[in-house]
Amino acid sequence: MHVNHRLLALSFAVAAVVALAPAALHAAGVPNPTTVISAAEVGKTLGGTFKQDSPEEGVLFFNEEGGASRVVEVDLWAANGKTVDALRQQAEQDGEKIEDAPAGLGDAAMYRPQHFGVTVQKTDKAGTVLWLTISVQNVPAAAETKKQALALAKLIAPRL
Image (tube, rainbow, N blue to C red; front, side, top):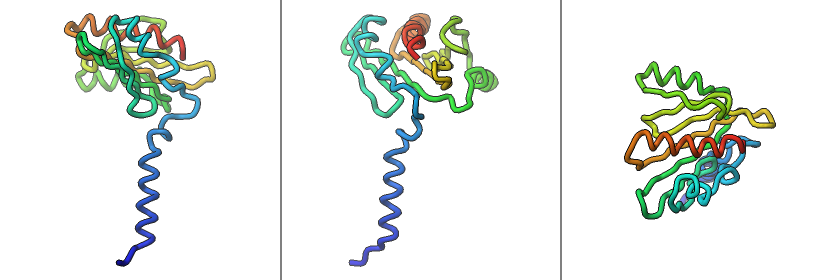
């Protein structure tokens, strides 16, 4: 059997890049979301019992055990030059309804009913501009969805 060693080496290199891509995308200095919120805190804030899952760096899911089967997603990334204001403008041009988030969450914030969540832009103490996105799904009423997402944002944003 003939083995093409160059092709084999290239295949391993591509596999390594794909495997390491999520870690590379999560910039140095950006806190891991597991350090700013726990399943117990989600449960205390929203009521209920939640189990934590982290499918990739920078992303946390909290799945409610029993109850309404709510799912909370917390994403935390470096903004990399993007702004919440620019995202809001683009989303509104695309026809998405955007609502204001309360002042004081960060440098800028918005609530996106279509995405069941709030996006916060905040500059941390080291000067890194971060994006925090929190969504809450499987909540029967839109107003309650917004209330829960904002409650978590008010808890997490000051920790950044």
